[in-house]
Image (cartoon, rainbow, N blue to C red; front, side):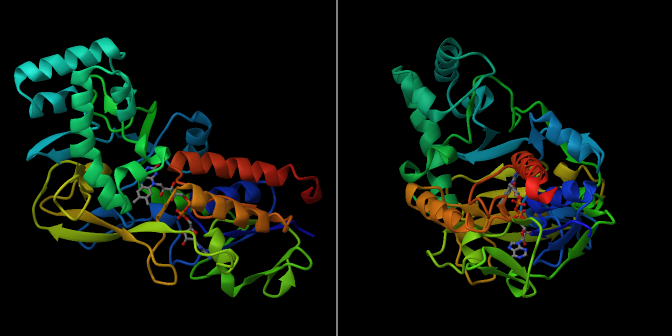
Length: 389
Ligand SMILES: Cc1cc2nc3c(=O)[nH]c(=O)nc-3n(C[C@H](O)[C@H](O)[C@H](O)COP(=O)(O)OP(=O)(O)OC[C@H]3O[C@@H](n4cnc5c(N)ncnc54)[C@H](O)[C@@H]3O)c2cc1C
């Protein structure tokens, strides 16, 4: 009998696990509830010829060479260093905040004081957090830290997370640094590349394997059930004998029996224009007055040549309501939610064939490279489990 595996969800987590198991001889039944593969990385071409990311701009960056070399099997890549501008005090300045941002927002004398003191306190070209700035105890650096906090983070966080900045988990607050120098790249990773023909094309190749059966429009709760007495996962009512990799929301798998895990979501509003470019830069962040957090113009990310046409995306963050058509995007990290997640995970441990992987199943914000690395590890765990030999 051929070995079988069941994978739920075809974002990076499920697709990478499917591919590695298929390469190792497993027949993989993959269930995806949406009408398309690629999860939140899904890209498509609009009628004006501009390719967009349906669930917000996704920029690939990593220091993990094993992840990049795995993905290179399925796509070529072009170099792309992401740059973000922020509208602050009616000026457009680089984000992360850097020396150019300081020059644009302060008088020459004050800017010189800030830059000189920062260069003495930290290594040039390093990236530090707001807390590092506050920790210096220098009154000028602390003034600058306070300015950046108020103008770049406070309102942005309130919009994005719906809570005041000081209630956010440090994993969120440490994500956007301040740059000691003029480097205006959004990320500092060694590898900053985008798939040549887009993410959907990469996923098509990743899943293009004779051992993988992709089932779209297949919400798992219509096909699988948990059977607590036997500790088995049932597929269409029959105990499934191989490994099951679940990448959907963990609370949904257990019918929200311990309560729903909260998320933030975003309304994505696309607008097409008959001009060559509108904002003429990949992303502008709006940390303050506007209701949206950022506007992306995809041509500057995909580097497509589409004369006299462009598409932009505005992102409006909002709370996620489970049971609605909304998509759970950002897990809300706090101690209560972490505890609830751990309780769900304990329930999951009674099913020895069940493996959890990814943003929703692990209730954790993963960048794409981190989720690919995690999926490679889960596939390895499955393959090294003696009972699946
Ligand atoms: C707006 C936004 C921007 C981002 N930008 C970046 C970026 O620039 N760079 C970066 O590295 N990362 C970025 N990320 C993170 C990136 O999206 C995640 O790393 C990635 O989506 C995680 O992959 P995943 O497979 O865990 O989850 P997903 O991509 O969400 O895939 C899960 C899949 O499971 C399916 N599913 C769920 N429940 C079920 C079910 N019951 N039955 C069947 N199928 C189910 C879903 O439909 C989905 O296709 C961004 C995230 C967001 C929200």
